Length: 110
Length: 110
Image (cartoon, each protein chain N blue to C red):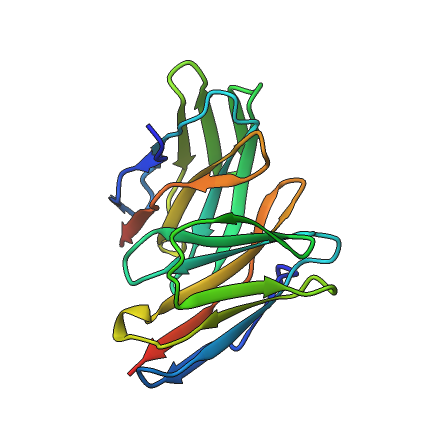
């Protein structure tokens, strides 16, 4: 257990739908990073939050949004889903020795 | 350049040594990391090296750092089938954000 918790582990949904992925960072970590990993591809940085505030944006589509709550957990909202959104979505929190990753949410859009 | 670069694939025979190479971007990066991702799992921190070190050894793993060339390598001695995974190189930037390579898929053949 890395200390970063992601739910759900698996999600299957239809095109056009909206889903919410949840992440709880490691205790004491203020930053949350969201990444997308498509099949056979590297990590694509989506967005970062620090202590409730958006801090950096990467290649995040307008259909996607995120927020970080006062208890520091974060949610990634994906809407108007397309087949190409099928991927592993990871969150990570940042500590002294680098990022700690959750085990990911595998999203399948059918 | 802006990308952390790694070869995408490496194949070795069981018992041989594996060497995975990486070129990072920022000469002022404080820490350099190697993460391991097994199939269907998240990224796990494998090892890291502080930028004022040239080498770090941890059991079968040896990390070499050449700051002049911004080159990082990971050597796995006596590679086993359980070492088959994707290995990500990452650098920690001055703002504490991390930049990841695309990952090297290591295949170990029996």
